[in-house]
Length: 322
Image 1 (cartoon, helix red, strand yellow):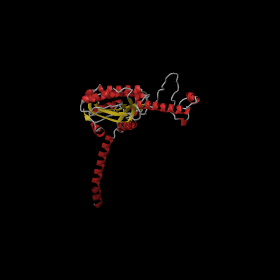
Image 2: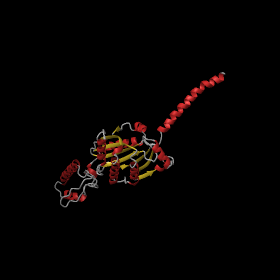
Image 3: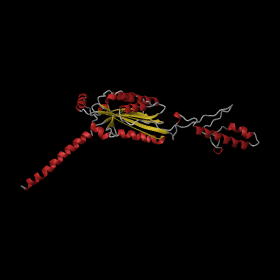
Image 4: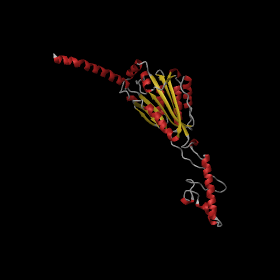
């Protein structure tokens, strides 16, 4: 009797523990369901090097070469030796003439540097201000044309050139602008930083979004394409994917556009569809002369994957109703 009593005594706690385990791990399995993502991007935040034009007058064809050098470093990369012959060979204060000449040349070089003469690639340097901005948009899954359009863009876009990246940005924002009737959530963020700090901020924005994917199934970054979308859901059949889509009425698509650009880029805060439209148009109109880097990210990417309202609350808490 005592043994039977002990068994009954432990049976209820064990059953309760098993029930709790089933519930916890069952919900965890749902929460850890695959969130596939796509990514298109490229660019660089490297500061351009400066070059200075050669002043010419009369028959003078000497150049600054690697830049102005003082006499103590020799004449190999500075002013050509033949140019100095009139000063050296003329006698009568030749050394004094050389000193005057170098003083004038140093003044001219400093003047060019202050004026920014010869600055390349849009006239910005390492101390220039750069804007890093992002636009997030949550749409109802009824905008089914959006995912195939982004997939096609990832497989065909040239992300290795400035012109190609500007085209990617325009095409992606156009795809989002074409579905205003399905807009549900939105958010923007824009910050200014020096050229050195802007890259770290851009990478922070990108990593934050990419960390929400359990599997990055399609990507085109600097023209390196990786496509794992067909095997993302373990070989699920097309019919099974369709049933999964129809069985969950709370499905969404979330797309994020991140850019780094020279100059100011102040995006409006999202309080409605007009703000969202303005933000997309503003970020999508950046030309190749200003665009340093871009990333387009979206989830879900693979067929049959879903993004529920619970996922939106858990992973995108900053999104506002449009």
